[in-house]
Amino acid sequence: MMRSQWCVDVTWGFYNRKNDKTEMSLQDILDHRRAVRHYDPAQPIDAGMVKKCIELASLAPTSSNMQLWEAFHVTDKTVLGKLAHACLDQRSARTAQQIVVFVTRQSLYKQHAKAILDAAIDDINRNSPEEKKEKHMKLQTAYYAKLIPFIYSRCFGLWGLVRKVLAQCIGLSRPIMRQVSEGDVRVCVHKSCALVAQTFMLAMSEAGYDTCPLEGFDSRLVKKALNLPYDTEINMVITCGIRMPDGVRGLRYRLPFSEMYRRI
Image 1 (spheres, helix red, strand yellow):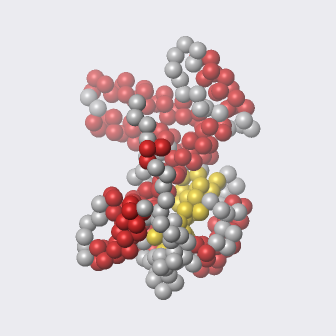
Image 2 (cartoon, rainbow, N blue to C red):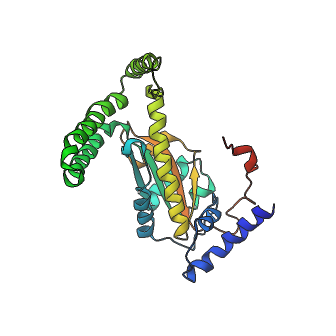
Image 3 (tube, rainbow, N blue to C red):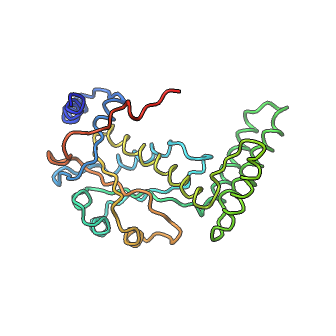
């Protein structure tokens, strides 16, 4: 209880520290970040700063650095209204000053793999020792031009089944990554996108803004409101603004850390 109360006190003292130009610690940022359900309509937020936070979030890690995500930063009032309705008219969405929708773009794996490979080859040419350049180029080419397309390709679950059987056979003689079905890869892409979304929320807290990640939404309506391609998947809808006094639902509760932590 003492810990939870301290978190609330830190939250409400946060803005004074920002005004005093006091540098925040990671502890401060984590204590400030709460899922805010009610935003202040009288306190707008700077779209440029939100964009900067999304840019900072692009530094988050993704599996194989594939970066199969996009962020849709919504400031238009008409679209905000459509998104609020798509988010089941939750108050967090209805009162949000801006909304950022993170989506996955697995279908872009070929383009991203090629761009990453080109960058890797350029880096090798610039920085690798001459005697190791050829070896490093072969490794990167084999990974991004052959393995990645094989892992990320989809065909009604059939390619995933082929990969799964192949992994199980190879796994009889040596360790191998077994999560290679089409469903497994889809989960991997969403996990990477979630890392980006979490980084965005922490950057927003550092900037003095509040957020709330929503999973209660009609994905078809969200895609329609944003005019998204059919193969896009919604990872997270994040509302943004500055909290009202009743914006956070009570003290933060976490299960005892001893129940989560295992040292081996």
